[in-house]
Image (cartoon, rainbow, N blue to C red):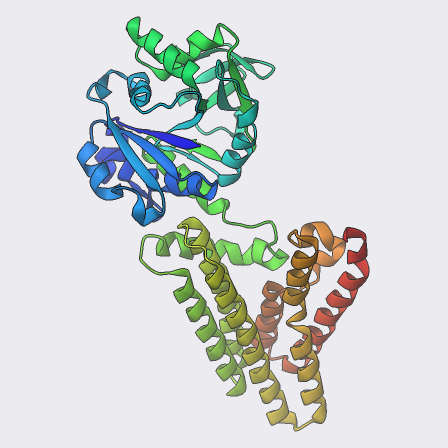
Length: 443
């Protein structure tokens, strides 16, 4: 399937603050139109037609033929872009292929990846004489409803659309599955001197030809500085994965997301953050071994926070890679091992007790089990192991990496090295044994 992106308008309200064409305004390190292209690419769409207008040269120079993004981009220019977005959308009739369905969206409307994937799943059900429109009926959570195009919906059909509509129960998200029928409606509306996309959609709505898909997830129209800031918040909040541990979700992300927001505007890569996290773990170990547990504990917690930043940067800027995931996992295991070795050395150095070595060994053997268990479960069950779903009340046991490093931080600050290693040994093995017992019902 091909995607058609409208990028013809002037975008005065946003350009005045960024001094760039609106589609090329960078949001957390990625221009708006590029973010849309890469999101659609994650949904297996790689052919794009971009409708240009006011900023044809700038957009072409930046995106080129799409090769640098791993997609194919062609362009159509709308000389009459000032008339309205309906004229821009109708420009696609020049490249339209008989009986094709195409995704139509605006360069400045951003969607969570899952929103588009769920929308596309319904595409085969749409006939050539219909169109499919993404709508949001959770009006309490819609940002700036007053500026949205409202929809009067009956079931899954749109009966009327309009910005000033008073009787409405949903809003238009700006994501369409287009067909030949939409192009015909656009042609008809333009012949009547109605140049907006909404005017054409209303012609079809009167015939009961506009089907609605009510989305579940995040989306936003980035139209002015206020919505730009809201889009930042939405994108950052969406970075928190469901597999997060309790400490990571309630403490670490409050810091890591702020760091990610700053770093997103730079060229720092996820692998560089992974290395920084590892070296912070090494520094933590050295402080523990040098009998400076306060700083060792503090650096262990910083290691934990940075461990979230690399993944956030990767997801936010579409820099995820299989090697990056492997690189992160391996260095995390080495980092954990080194920190515990530093703590074990400090205990043995001060007490010269064989017990210190035995407890240290028990902690070292238990620490990798959380990740190992999740990886093996994923391989066998072909689904992600989610503590919120699979662990029950045991999800609060601080045996995942975020919990372990939090325990180490407390142990370092309070200078309770022996107690910390004993707790690590107990909780890691306890979690593993519980999971072995509990997971049978999921396999």
